[in-house]
Image (cartoon, rainbow, N blue to C red; front, side, top):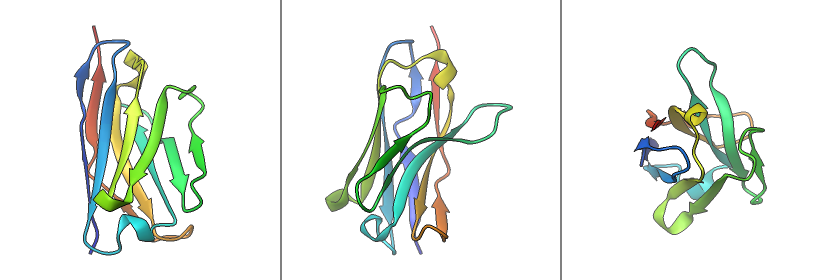
Amino acid sequence: QVRVVESGGGLVQPGESLTLSCTVSGSPTLFSMYATGWYRQAPGKQRELVATIDVSGSTKDGDFVKGRFTISRDMSKNTMYLQMNNLQPEDTAVYYCKLSLNSWGPHYWGQGTQVAVSS
């Protein structure tokens, strides 16, 4: 059974950076996934796509990213990352890691990590 754990969230000031990590344990491994990605959900809002990367290495970002965030993977560590720069208060949300074994599923979610941006 696969286990997905996010970490790295916290409270930062506007303009600062954070790196989130998504560590995968068990089976199937991160290497086996068709696509992996980061999503976020702010209070009172729907969960939205932040960034995804698929088996070919192609990435897709949410419209709000505007070059500020970078998704990456380290297969040797079974870990996916989200480097977030120039964070703004509107980036405050719980950030979730999603793994998709195939385009049609199954999909695996982590429990989320809180990111808060405030002065």
